[in-house]
Amino acid sequence: MEALTPLALIIDGLLVLGLLWLAWRALNCTELFTAIVLFIAFGLLMALAWVRLEAPDIALAEAAIGAGLTGALLLAALARLQSPDADAAVTGRITPASRSTSPMFRLALLAALAVAAGLGHVVMTLPADAPGLSHEVAAQLAASGVGNPVTAVLLNFRGYDTLLELVVLLLALLGVWSLGGKVLHIDTDPSPVLDTLSRQLLPVLILVAFYLLWAGADAPGGAFQAGAVLGAAGVLLLLAGWRLRAGLVALPLRIVLIVGPSTFVLMAVVTLLVEGQLLAFPVEHAGLLILIMEGAAMLSIGATLAALFMGGNPDNQQVHR
Image (tube, rainbow, N blue to C red; front, side, top):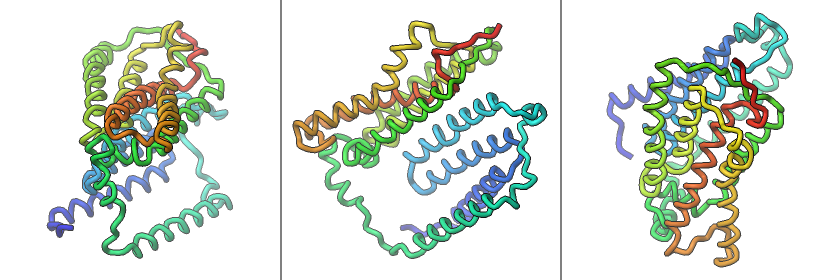
């Protein structure tokens, strides 16, 4: 590992201090809207930290999902937040009067400190030269069907991890739908600025999504980053007043939502029958099969994130004029 220059040390030091300050402010802020803004700023700064750690794939995911779409979901949740106290509902404030003296708060604080101490001990006792599995991944990269080691791990060597992540995302949406909330639409024309912005950005976002999907085979990118950008396009459409037509709410939407996990399961069953192992792709077809799986996953991720932003089951749409 190359020695850091004084300028790099200063930048990294400021980055660490900024992350700690934003995390502390976000956790201790009593204004919910301000806390969400601080969380988004923390995510963007965290993406820069991943870049400094030479992990561009994680940096892309953090910027697109951790800061962008998660921030949008939190803002949507804040807008729908209902409180018995009218003043609290309007201002979005929480009351921390007895929080610091609560036994549960103290117990949670002790548990967090214990976990932090354990993680710190593990980090400090790591060997100076940990071999890891990078050599094994590099040795099998040619047989994986892709040139990016991160994509090879996520879609080939440990593809079942990605399958479980897709299932968890789908379960989160089903949990939101099971709450029985209604999708509220205000039947008004969007502002000229938002309407123009959505018309210009939508094609760009779609092109960027497909580029990230295609580039993910040999460079940072892939299904989750592409799906997050596609989900952002859906969020922009929803903000501009677009809503699903009645014919697209039921079966077509559900097909898009499950096409990613279903494709993974189908590939797992076929490879188990043919190769004798889950998601063990034949070398000559590995690249094409991974591209098909990533494309299906991108569509499901984008649709799921946009549906989460709706905040309710689209079958229960309610229009306000």
